[in-house]
Image: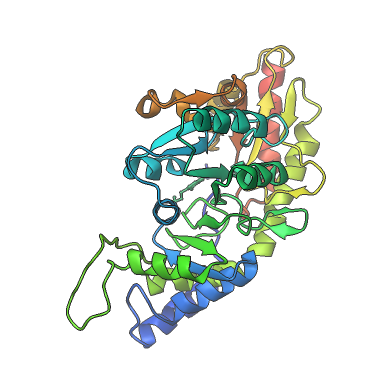
Length: 377
Ligand SMILES: *Cc1c(COP(=O)(O)O)cnc(C)c1O
């Protein structure tokens, strides 16, 4: 039986051409023509003036927080409903992550709870140093409200668009809203370099500094001279070759993933208790992953776990939604603001196979198996 993965890599066929060029010119290094061309194409696509290609999205967030001057004891705000990589770099810098609940509309950072937390820390004389916002599963967060809070309280906004390349908010691409924004090219993301990420900004000084820090912070001298601690975070010219070819097909990838969502919605929407992550007007998701929620009161016995285990017997991979970070053992001491919405999403949700290379037959097979399970109960 063939395996249907949650979100496997999907090559376009042109990747090897750029890799071959790297070999032919012997640019087998963390810099070179593919890196330059990839950075330029990325910035152009996202709509930011500058970008730097990096070894991961996590590295990009780490550098963004350094550039936001985050250090020991600082407060950094982060949604609870996200992947741990959104928050880990806060801890690398010995700052304190403060987790915020989701709102119902987009499952992202709740603006009301966010403002409550900001006010709380200002009152204590500890204004948050930065706010990390995440567009979960590709769905835009409520940017207008969140950006206006960042402006009102003068707090740096870092946009974690790791899952959201190709999504847009009122016609503007995600990844272009932060003072700094990041995306990820990990193997499971909508496009991949096998592993990699990028940092964006409209401020050339930020990107210049990020490039400096990402390549071991070498001062301008003929010998190796260092006045700051550096990192080895640049993307290789080989990986950037993969990225160039992947970026050329991003619109097709978004289209395929959106079609997956439409297919699931049409097939499964009528089942009892099942609902989807809907797009408010002006919010366009790349539908990186299609997720369903199952209301235990209406579902006549099916649960996310039953679906996941049943699909597993058919060699179909599915996953629970993100477990809220404030419930993770490693973050158990971190402050949390909000109720139990993110927790409910985790309990009630499941991510279905969402790769852009899924066939109609695959999708039908998955939906039939979910329906079968319902009938058996
Ligand atoms: C994948 C991901 C990251 C980290 O990206 P890597 O390239 O895997 O380091 C950060 N934030 C979110 C929301 C992600 O999904």
